[in-house]
Length: 420
Ligand code: GLC
Image 1 (cartoon, protein in one colour):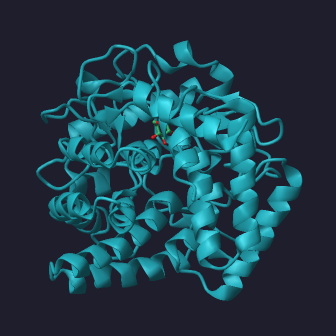
Image 2 (image 1 turned 135 degrees about the horizontal axis):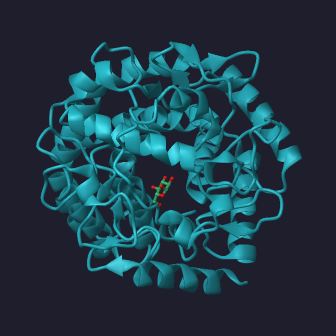
């Protein structure tokens, strides 16, 4: 399909999924506003409607809590096609929200949008107003999720990593005992998508058990450090936050906000924290179980994100690229969400194998920053081919290229528009 037609189609997806200022990831399966989806989607809107792009963030921050936390779902309008909805989360916010967060891409994308905006004065006005809210969000991360200043955030739920059912979480999640008093529920996801492409029931029971634990702790983060039976350091959260802090620092300079010393200290700390996740034998960075204090030895697409964070040495970056190239010999389309030689690799099941366009975009940025232009270009070409062959799906089979999960997916369409 010619580029122009693909672009038209991508814009149509965003317009169809627009709900007066926020964009649903896809109708039915995900009928609300999601945090990191909103970030990627705004990059897509930016290509043809800058005002609408900034609006996405204004609506997102309507969900921000008084303590600075930015929730992963904002339930702007009631909808029954998704579970767990606002009642199950039991948070007390208007508009209703979930009670956990997601990879904090916002600072980086606001900075990017500000740099590239055609309408500069609009961009300055919007970014200036967003700056203190983003700062409050990052402060919440640092002081509530890394109280020991280890340089790694405590992530309390697989959903917070954005990569819900990655095999990287299996062992840690298995330690969560399913609550025998768990109130009954009906999953909605499997009525929209074939169950073979979604998480297992035993995982869902644990996801919901964690919710009950948060409610009992009244969402008190410091209590959760003691009471939450799932605590991991996730490369998706930590690398995205590291780069977001670097971009927040740039915004602070730009607006003369004077927060540089505080933000620089966070950056130094996460630089060390993430470097410690390197595994020489596997040639990869690894997620880390913070309860057991041990590395999670499963290669995942996020293992390449220290390139995006910009923290790895030249030597480690080269080694990462070799690992990526070896994955590229196993599959037709990079980057599978799980190492394709790992026994837990499942090419059609959500985060256990399929390719996700947004993670590809982050990895390609990292590769290009380090000068690995050929590798970044392979990822771009693979991703474009997937758009051409299978449209804007939620995720894709790394060998056949089949579109999987939900269709007409906002952040996927946005990546066609925003991949320059
Ligand atoms: C799924 C994904 C998550 C995404 C959400 C909405 O839960 O795992 O990363 O934000 O869907 O698209």
